[in-house]
Image (cartoon, rainbow, N blue to C red):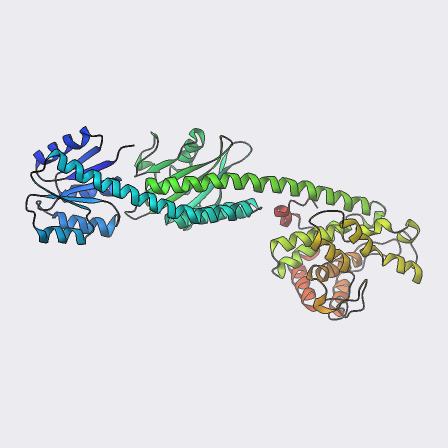
Length: 497
């Protein structure tokens, strides 16, 4: 693609001759007869080089250069042509960031040589800037590939793209299974949160998806897009839409906006953001694969939990109810997502070791003897031995092993006390006790809720961690008995309770 040049001079012959010379060697040239008209063109379009006279009616070339540097770009290459050249004039223009100085009358070799030199230097500078920008992009790519949760990954893509382009607003749309685009994450003002954030944006995004081509408004568009500037919200000064393509199929669109400014996205912005979207597509595929694998894993876990509870109709769904309550308590305490997963999994499998307990003890309807109770107390260790054969269950195993420890140190199997007991185990202990007390058993009716709550409170500091008890009370006050059935809170874990 040949560079685009804006030639500004009040003399028609200079504009005509300059255009003829430069187009003959392949440049694209547009002209303006005064600084005011030239500045308006610069506000609307992007150019690779500006050539301007110094003395013109109205604003001078020096005034124009100042305006370009202050309001449009500090890096846009500028060459000055003048018939009144002096050393002072040359120095003055160079102080404002001009890269070339040509005297009138000029020969074709003089103007072409100066333009080629400035364009080449500018291209080298852009390539160096691009290279410097790509280095941190590599670090971003590493972080994206390491992110295994799609929602957080999409937020990361929007955040990084907005940071690199200094966009005022950004959004990321993804296609659903029916091929419909919807905004998954956005940042930068209230407008992006509306159902139709910008007039024309959804139609443009549809076009980008269908053609798998990027689009740059008010810059060098890379495609002939059937959209007029008037179809967009008047607050937008420039918009850039980049397809996210995976295996030759567009799966989403990244939208970046400048609002109510004279800034415009550049081709360089488009190139860098396209690289980012290419890495994002790979990361999204990786995260989706992880979520599918995790979903299958939790399906297996749920099946195991159901198999355990199938031995006793009175404990059916006990693990699922406990896990729901435990996750709510953990969220209330500000536990991070990764550990929430471990707590949810441990909640489902906390009694997996009961598979190894004989039926005549496990299903006994009367009171257990001392010896029988000692056999029951083996189930945490049995559970750990079972889970040891499954990969990635280290934190889950620790929680399962210690969920019958007491805060006072009088529990089993190892007699840990206080914060020696893993937090997940302390949380599950409270949820387990409450679920057991409020459920029917063959030897008793379910305990009334107020009495069960009183038992939990009275055991704070002895059987249970007081902080966990306080968090549980807050959860119960907010959700009531539904704290055992808030299914919607677990979608991000892909756990089917």
